[in-house]
Length: 136
Image (cartoon, rainbow, N blue to C red; front, side, top):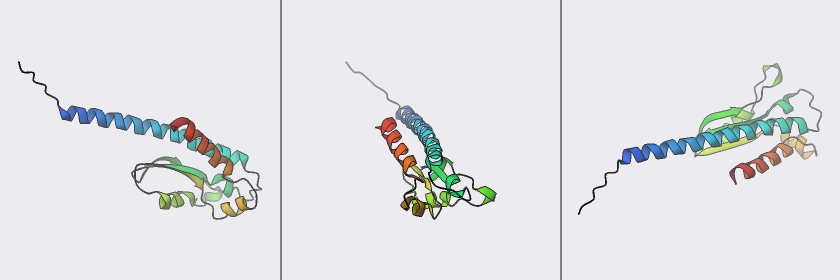
């Protein structure tokens, strides 16, 4: 008695690729929400006097997949000034897998934070907590 089993590996590969893509899209969706929460928290928690509104509006995030930006929100600065945060993110990415970067690219953000003011800390803590809760 012989049993012949035919397995079409092309169908298996297609199903595996589709499942992987669904996981990527679900992760991007979650990271998008976390990024928006970061921006909101960082803007609302900042206990500094923002003279030009640039520091508060520079809070941003970007999601990369294999080095290509697939989602994000780079804050708009007043008077059409360029926001250096996106350029900073592009320098930080490794180009491998799914990457999520949040922060504030204004050159004086770390100085203000170092003076004891909350620029990014509360937003970073929120991101860390939400990533642990959603991704384990």
